[in-house]
Amino acid sequence: MRKYDHMDYASAIRWCTSINGVLPVPTSEEENDFLYQLGSTWLGVQTDNMSTVHWTNWKNGEPNGDGIYVHLVKEFDGQWNDINLEGGWLFETGTTCYTRVTGN
Image (cartoon, rainbow, N blue to C red):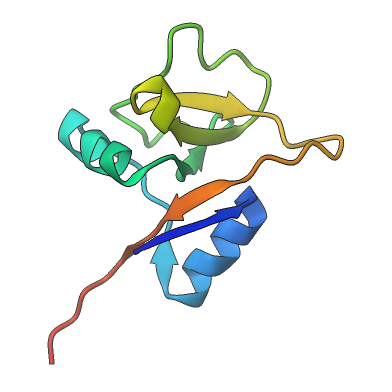
């Protein structure tokens, strides 16, 4: 699901949770390209816990340690950027959530 309203990271997590979803963590170039086509989004991984991430698409020079939150940036051709949300700095973007599809 995609919500184009701009949300901060905490709001994105709350929205995904409310629809029984999770923020995406791309595992391939193809998946990252799919998300890129939808627009910028928060990713479901933080730079302080990348042990389960086996594929990345960092922008040149990233992660540069300025924050733990990871953002797929449409304007960077879908490359990733780490963002600092501490000290009252507010960053908002649209959000994509993965949800489980179930049949009846």
